[in-house]
Image 1 (cartoon, helix red, strand yellow):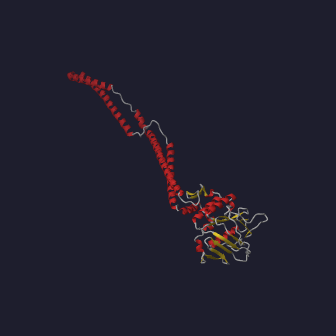
Image 2 (cartoon, rainbow, N blue to C red):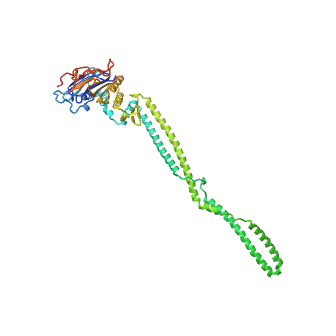
Image 3 (cartoon, one colour):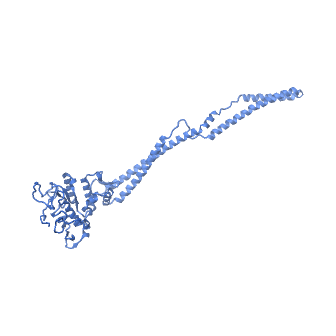
Length: 447
């Protein structure tokens, strides 16, 4: 059973002269009044009584008071907590009448219940870590988020590489009507050499014709001068003539092959090969971009799987408040980050988390609830009742939403000149929104 505040009596603390009240066991008890009347001093007194010296006000005794501060709380577990005297010594008595001390109070009083702003003003990461600590899934969620970040960074890098490849491919030139592979200069030169060799043979044959012709002339001259050797010369002449005819016939049918096309190709080989390389580079860049896009899509699927696993982890957790979750190390409520929540939503989220963080502490102190309109305040009170949580809060107001009104360090009762009732009706058995003020010893003289 969580511990709550049953009764509260405060004298001569800060602005308080004498205040006594019995907060509602569940729901919201609103301390109303104008500024500077002592509302916050009541909360400070509770913090000091239960939280110890670290919550002691710098100037604890009320200005003008002759008596020392005195605080007395009775708790739902039967403990009686008192601070009184010049040194405000602590006295804690348990139901059996045995004395105890601050260590016993610290065992069930939540520090955040006394100091909710500490949670409200924490960083996004600290709020998220607090929720994950409650759920017991912080380590697993951190592993999933680290895995998601790793995959996301890897995908981002690959996406950048793919974009660069696509841009590079788009900037590269592409040439039509060129070979798919670079042209070999050696092959063209070898083909040229073959043609030159054949043309050289043709030249040799033409030269043979000229030589035979000259020999024929020589032999004719020799025949004229050497009639004695006419028979031999005539035979030689006949032979040479026959050979000349055969050689001429062969030479007359010869056609030289042109080399100008190959010479042009050899001269243009660097240009052609540069274009071929451009085309190959463009095709490779496009293929690289396509491969990287495929990897990007695969990583996207892996990231979505990790996110689904993370959502399943949080969906299966017992959340302090429906709609709470953690994404990217931030606390979200109904999809909204902390700085996008209304002040009322921040209070409700903070209250729910603090309650779950320390279930043994059944109360929470809330200062300055002016940020809630009356409708939101009523709904908040009903939510507290449903949660079985006691909240004592302050509000700069004298309206009917206040449980009690504090003026000049006291709870006022009866009718004021303005006609506003000092006895505020609230939630309880009658189903109203807020707890009923229970008169006590507030009329005792505080000096």
